[in-house]
Image (cartoon, rainbow, N blue to C red; front, side, top):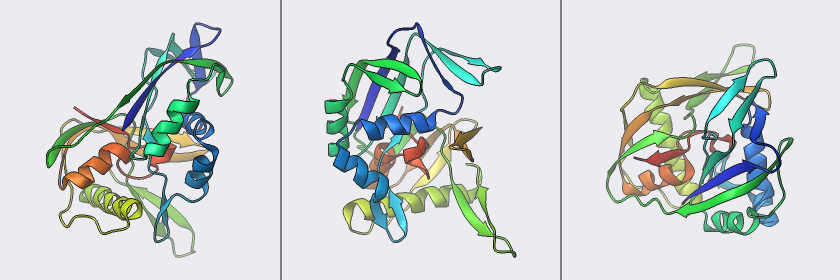
Length: 244
């Protein structure tokens, strides 16, 4: 399920946000779903061993914008669109119930929801073409001799990137369904030049890539990619995709 929201300023002619606004969008989602669901997703999620998955992702804001370098803000002229993807019926229903209220805040901005659209994105084949709506991040954690840890980010041209994408989907499938994923793996073919995106989320630097791709594999895993997002940190605004 993909939910598209059109955000408009309540009193001004523009929406001005920090350059790195992912945490504001995440907060908007958590604050506008059923409180019990928000608490479950935030504190528990769907578990696979030590991994916890929130089972939603969201896009970058889409619209006409300009950057205010001096203030380190991004200014959307008139309106901006946000896409939220999830396989959870409860999440999409509760967004529909809560999101259309009159008074809304996004950071310091007063906004209204000017449009609300829900769309089932059904995968019907074992090969789909996707474009990223927010950067896809694939990473692993290494330990230095002194015991400190650091993060290794991979780019889509590296084989490890595909392996991480595939393993992530298989873990999500088990966490959501309580059973092993279909036997065959998901394979990725790059269809446009990947662009590196460096994003700060609550002070932490995260690297991801935006690009078009072809994914091939079991329809169940492809559907999960469309619904939950690809790669890691989906609930922080990474890996949201749509079929082309």
